[in-house]
Image (cartoon, rainbow, N blue to C red; front, top):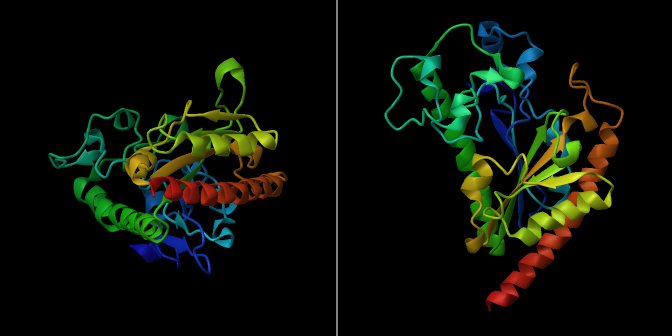
Amino acid sequence: MAPEFSEKGLFEVLEPSSQTLPLVFNSPHSGRAYPQGFVRDSRLDALSIRRSEDHYVDELFGAAPDLGAPMLLAHFPRAFLDVNREPYELDPRMFEGSLPPYANVSSMRVAGGLGTVPRVVAENMEIYQRRMPVGEALERIETIYKPYHACLRSLIVRTHLKFGFAVLVDCHSMPGNIRIAGGQRPDFIIGDRYGTSAAGDLSRAVVRLFEDMGFVVARNKPYAGGFITEHYGRPAKGLHAIQIEVNRALYVDETTLAKKPEFEAVRTGISWALAEFAGYVDKYASDSALAAE
């Protein structure tokens, strides 16, 4: 299945020359290699089917390896398979045949058409012309979802074993029409599952860094973090997970999906924030280790 997506495979780890930081970066929704058969069988055109992408987020956060941290990025698109869901969040209305009894068919995400195998892209646009055989959905989970999470898990475990501490930064983008209290458009939203997936000091540090650059930043509302943040964040064990959402209107034309002239400035700002956060995390990890002795 991999060659159908990208010559680089289904996903890729960008490794630093040497991992010097207890950080792992993840970009699960920026994949933009669409199999021809998938597009052909869809009721959407080649542009509309991309509406759920986190456009170019892998590039926006591309400084991570230079800082000394690995970055996992998907080449397969979110519209084909969403790894920021439980492994079997599946909508029975989409499939021919019976789903396995352990499938979660009643989550809010399934109801909205945004399960592990999505039924819609953004703006509630139906992807498929007809029902899909259950076996095809299960194959996607076995051949893409599970290997992706095995890779992510190994990066987190490796980091935790090396440093005694690990912070996963889950990188995403959000539509430009999102508003927060007071009708403001947030430039960034930092999610830590309301303090359950990461220490508050860490997520507040990210908020301050972006605010220092003049951006409008919110925390947890309306995006507190998805399955990945919730699943991997275990602060009591020194495993922290933070989600960063970037407003697409800052850097991409949401109609044509072309990069705006501001793209480089946004990328540079994110790179600066990551470097500052890396220093903060390094000190935070050292202080935590001393406190535990």
